[in-house]
Amino acid sequence: MNMDQFSDSITIEGEIFDFDPERSVALIPCENCGHLNQVDVTKEGDTYILSSFSCENCGHWNSFD
Image (cartoon, rainbow, N blue to C red; front, top):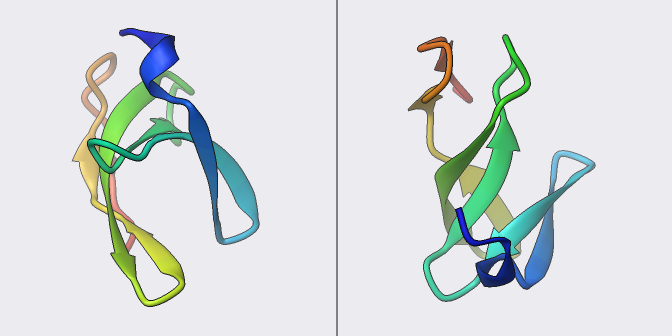
């Protein structure tokens, strides 16, 4: 993972995450093990929405429904 790509930050539900604006990807920790995952982010108006993801480290399903 090249941390230089994450040159910006975004706030989602009061939490700040590193963000790659060119790819619309944020670094989001797994709610189970805390491992940082690259997660697709969609912008709707002024709000960013995370895609649900399976942790690449432990396999836990992180859902944001």
